[in-house]
Each structure stands twice: as structure tokens, then as C-alpha cells.
Length: 297
Image (cartoon, rainbow, N blue to C red; front, side, top):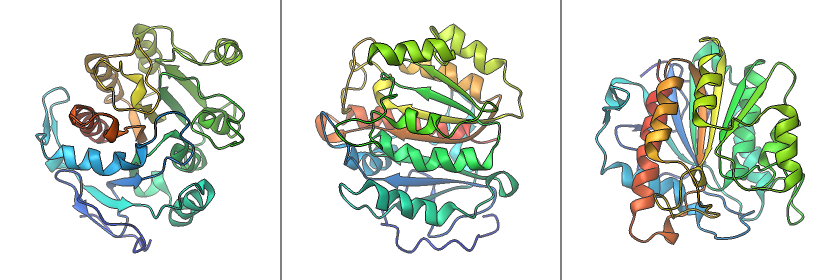
């Protein structure tokens, strides 16, 4: 394992680590870290995403560590699982403040620190995306989702799963870029906003082309809401939308990203209790494996 950083994570809640990952109460240089946010306090339809992180970890033990799609193996890399952040139900700010406290002094690029954050619903992505925007001045954010998530607030909550991209957009500068794909639900004005700002890729081919045109050194962050996938494949999510993507389309995206500089990611909105077959958890876990491997150089 690479050099240990001083960050103290002893308040984290322990859990069974993702397959092949080493459990750790510290952060390390030159390593990828898994963090769980077991929070679904702004869920507006079907709750249960708070159980997502551990369901993804549990299902990982039905996977191989090797990906035949990317031809990489988890066992060849430094991947640590730091467990779950302490959660304050219905108090989003306290959980986000804890994440900020343990990461605010990190130099992600200099120390080659990467995160895969597991949700939880989409509001948990605010802290990680802010962290990456602060560390990479020309960051590109790729948003894979069924929903626009550009409301200024929802049900009285500005930091809602339905407003996450608006909150992040408020922190982006002209040096940053947002690319959205899979979007098929949202208010008219949010679709007009995406059109005016050219954030939405209209087809998989357009998305792959836009990623391919990015400089190989430019930092990219991926935020993936699992309702991006068609509910025929993954029904266990809080706000399912018909007409989504397949795992094979996702792999095409990962193959293009694997040639770029993916520096961080989050995977959100698995609600495992909605799908008692366990198929959604198994699907999400395999998605997590591919993201972890795409994060590796």
C-alpha cells in the first residue's frame, strides 16, 4: 500500500469491504478509495437508497475481480474501502460537513487520490463533486441519469436529489464542462436549459464522440444515477423511468473513458429493498467494478 495520509476516519461506520478491497480507516496516496453515503433523506418517491452501499458491497462477492470488457483485474491495483460516513437522518448538511472535514485539505492530483462514492440518493454527490471542482480547475463532469436534476429546489429542499446538478452548475466556471446523457424526464424549462447550454448528448454516439475529443490529460468526473439504466434491467431504484440504457451501452462508455483521465466517480440511487430478487444489487455491483477499473491508469 502507498504512503498513508494523516486523515483520521475512525468515526466511519465499518462494513464488509468491496471484493478485493482492503478495509482502511485512513486515506492513502496513489490509491482509489470507496466511501459509502447511506443517506436518502431527500427521496421523493421510493425510499431505500440508504441501503445501497452495503448491498453493492455484498453483491460484489458474486463477481470475479477480472473484467473481460476492460481486461483489468481489481487485484492489480491499490483499492481501499473506508466504510460508510456517519449519517444524520434528514440532516443532509451534517453528513456533507463530515465529508468536507475529512477531505478539505487533500491534494487529489498531487497525491493521486481517487474516490468512488456509493449512495445513497443523488444529493450525496454534492460533496464529492465540489471537492473535485476545487482540485481540478478544468474538470469535466459526465452526468448519466434519467432525470435532468436541474430544479433550483424540490419540496422545500435546495440540496435535493432533484436539484443536485443545479447546485453543482452554480459552482462551475467557463473552464469546466458538463456532459449529460440518458436524460428522459424533467420539466420543459430544464430541457430548454440543457439545449441552450449544450450540455445534453442526444445519442450514445454523440456522447462517445464528445468524450473522445477531450484531451487525454483533462480530468473527468463521472456521476451515475442508476435510473440511467432501463428498469427492465434494474428495477431497484427510487425513481425508475422507462426507455433507459443497457449494460452494454454503459460498457461502451467505460471503454472510451478508460483511455482518458477519469479521476473520480459516484454511483447512486440503488434501492435494494425494492428488488428482493437481488438482481438490481448484482447489476449495480458489476457497474461499480467497471467504474473502479476505469479509474485505474
